[in-house]
Length: 326
Image (cartoon, rainbow, N blue to C red; front, side):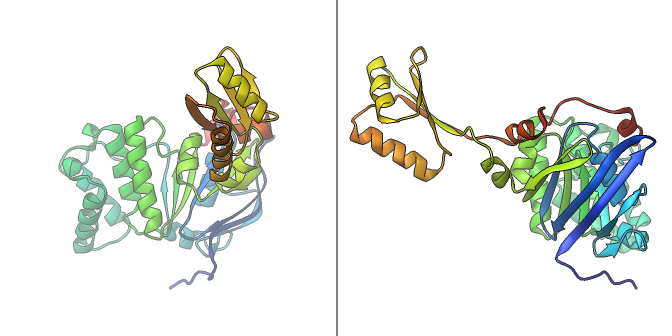
């Protein structure tokens, strides 16, 4: 029986490097991911996200770096890592010719569960992921959202402590995507650590305890979504007025505000927090200036990525090297 090194981190990486030929894909990556958390790695196609997942899940070797996954050193104990993790890739591992239940039982066999335990585990996951409608039907009949849930359920048959989800909602409609978000949150609440890669910045914002931005093989920023957004200037409160006279009166009250006389709006710099809003409303009330509409804009993760890299995180840039390994 193998024993992992006790640590607060589900995954630790130092100086991870990987090249394909003359192309440097990962250039000195450092990461620490807490147990039971949701970590999101974001960046455009070709940034190196899938390559990183493949290295951390023991599918391809790194060129350099120290990597500990689920308490095991990747260089010396890859088999122990494979036993402790689950991986759901961009492309489904579901067998279309088998029913939903048969897919789960196949995974139970691969994990060497006995027949009774395998059937019990399959039944638990069918209930947990609301898969009863497809349990007895060929997987080929599943909708996209149902198929992704089945794929994730198959990953969980072996009760992994750490799950890699590589672009788990790509191609799903908004409703199916939000259903998957609920499933992912539930896994984290049960103590499973989630390593999520995504191009959907809203997904990272909604789900992740911590976000890392990957661009051209390097981590350009990491922290909570709130922390990353708070580093950005440009937050403001937007007021709209019914009459030009009200706009002019408000502009006189707020020094540094930017009026738009055509739209009858006033843009007031601010972080959009409760204290800022309360201060604006109090000053308007004291000056007896009526407001037609109030809205708040705060920088989002795309603003952060754009400021750091000069381009959008969802920019469609797929390199031949990265595509080869997907």
